[in-house]
Image (tube, rainbow, N blue to C red; front, side, top):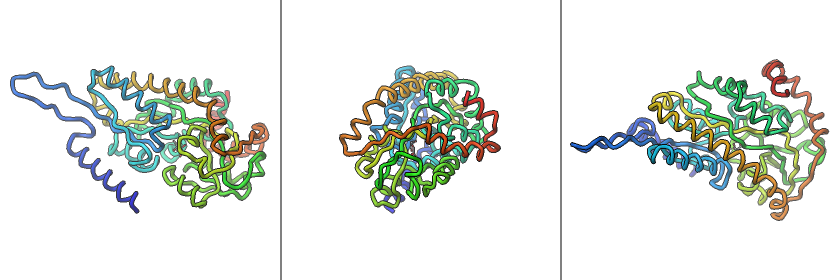
Length: 337
Ligand code: EAX
């Protein structure tokens, strides 16, 4: 209830902010007999995870780059921890223009463009460097551009990471071990079908509700990259960690199309350059941090298992057939290559 009220207040204040200053732009302060002060641009960007997360650090980097490249004229205002709503809510917000920008997992984007679903297939991405080349190449551009009819420009694919399974009930080694477990998943049809196929009880839920659901045991487990299991303190409420890496979640940095296209060309250019550099920075940050988490999470009390990925890959293969028609065989094959 309290959260809802806070969210409504934030939304209301955003509505006034938009009404007052044209969607994040600030009006010129002209003094007589003086050249007009250069216009400033404050881009509001929302994400779901903590200020300690890779998303937040990457966005802070982008803010720094924007300021440096624009002599302080362009900056980000970052809203973390789902302050502006769930990933689905903020994607809708960017589509409508009530918030300018968001950084989200691509999984909930499947509800806006089915093309993103190809990334959600189990084990389709196992080598992230190859995946980065796909994301930054024609296939990535094509998939991102499928959001344009919704009023969204996809600026780039950042990293969320390889997803690992945690739960409070039992060690997980083989796919059978998830039978009957209530697992929170992102709101994504491929993810839900995968865990249903394995015999788990999938519970799609926004990230903002997850910690409490784990704490109150409304769900037994969840799956997320190690960096999130660590920075969101899931080790406090989950005993077992299985290094499954069953899905790879890219993240997408999205901006409202009308807002972006309404900006002066030089400002657009600065945003594109800063995004590209911040994207590379954030990907590297994730890779550099990655190796430190297993021992850190063990020290925090988690019991870690190392499942055989080949066994899981075999067990989840039928999901490819299940979604082949919807995603397109050619797209799946292109990504597998
Ligand atoms: O995008 O919902 C999730 O589990 C995501 O990994 C998280 O919100 C970051």
